[in-house]
Image 1 (spheres, chains in turn red, purple, brown, green):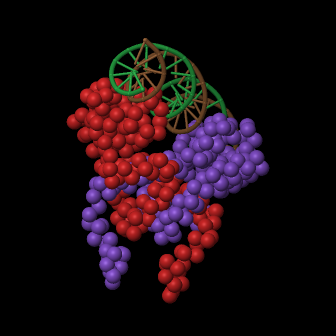
Image 2 (cartoon, rainbow over the protein chains, first blue to last red):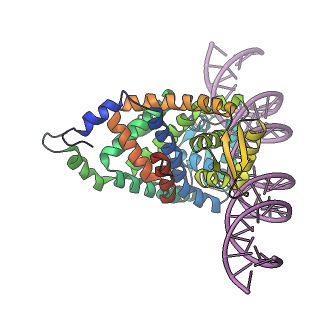
Length: 170
Length: 170
DNA sequence: AGCTTATGTCAGTCTTGTTGACATTCCAAG
DNA sequence: CTTGGAATGTCAACAAGACTGACATAAGCT
């Protein structure tokens, strides 16, 4: 970097020159980082004959206790048959409880049991530890940029969901 | 932001306050962004009865023409049997060529055919378009942060691979 | 009463990961 | 120079988890 030119000015130019090469680096970074992102929970899940699908369900049930099946479907972006297979095993293993809705009795409201919360913590702790290390290494400015780019990469409707979850504006 | 205090100093404080909530936001952002990241190529691949595994193979063969199966294995982080199934279909569909090594005849060197390059472009173009939009929206400082955090999130050995590919220091 | 919505289930398919078994090729130690 | 082990790649069989399609049940709504 040339002395006397701020980073801002320097990178400002590259806006005009977003080369395929730079974009490809971003693409590969995304791929490799996602490997790392899922590696730790995957190891834990493998012991329990569960998979990522179970993790995702547990995560979002913990995040939004009492959520309905339909709601979860929209968040996860899978079919109900696919989700149902996962939920069935989690319920029969005693990690998740399903309660018939009081207002609308068609709905099932989902909660983690004590046992479910225990697993959720174990999985989150592993994933958060890596995220924490990465955030510390990169520094807060980088973290802000990281989140900005990720949000810009989401589908518009998914971004809305993400922001709702983030800000707790249910 | 307070005048006279650099961003570094300001956010430096928050290093001490990386709450579980902030980390969880990062985790969810990663999940939702990856959905978007793969969505466009997935649509193209679905038409062709290919999947993400094919895309990944095509991407890295294009990236490092003449690479060996073993090499590709290390990059993709899957078993050779898994990769082999994908390669077999790509070869028999005429997208990839496999040549026995001249020095070491155990090795197979992989190249894209003209047809393979065509599909590669189609997939890359879609994925790059989203990445480009996200980068433009977020701005160059954010992009730098994005890459920093992603690199910090990778497993150490994977990071080495990533940097090698990035810098072309084969 | 009849239409729609929310949920669950059964059956079948596809992709993509796994392990196990095996063939070929290379290399180095005896 | 031979032989045994390591490296590389292929084939087969299996499992997880995604998908579609069809259908059942219950509840809400017009």
